[in-house]
Image 1: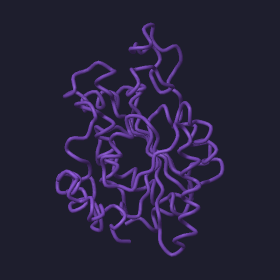
Image 2 (image 1 turned 60 degrees about the vertical axis):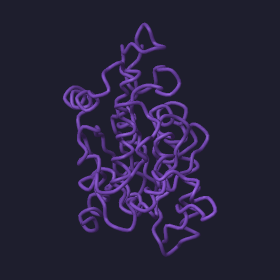
Image 3 (image 1 turned 120 degrees about the vertical axis):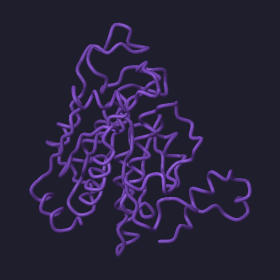
Length: 281
């Protein structure tokens, strides 16, 4: 595949900022890149519109660096904080109505299989906790029940970050937020556990404080979704704006979460384990 689809037409190229042009010329395409190579290529524009210290922006950078075939990958998302970062990358990106991303991704994966029968096309959902755990939960679960060969990645900032700081299903019980002054009344939704019993052949829980693990789990999830079945990765991406901590403390907050309640965990079916042992180098 060429990078024609991500290259601006000549008539408009001069209108684009140099930062955008740099994404095309120095993006993560056609050469094997990984988390270890971050800084040697461009995965997002420098002036992306996320808040200082945004965990979601960091999560998106790590996911972009971990994609095994970014030029043959379609990212599907929804409105929300993740949209603002994903739309500033050079990845093939499609935004959907809020919550129906897994249904759209299912259709796109089937269409790409028909259109490119001899070439692998990865379809990866990258959405926040609201899109997956709340309004999109039913469509997410049904894509897993059906065995759709797509990867679902949650960038979990535990809050509705771009609409004022309301609690989400993934907020921790008792957490006081801008629009939850008395604290959240029920526990964090167990989406990771639900993935295990809903048809996912692979699931992993990780935080942005462990970039190598993020890279490893994203790669495994995408490889397994190609041939074995649906996969799920849940990445903790804390939000300094709405969780009220200094922007330079994002990684420390994530590290504390790893010790407290967001420990690294990886689960896979025997079929998935066998596939990785024989195919992932």
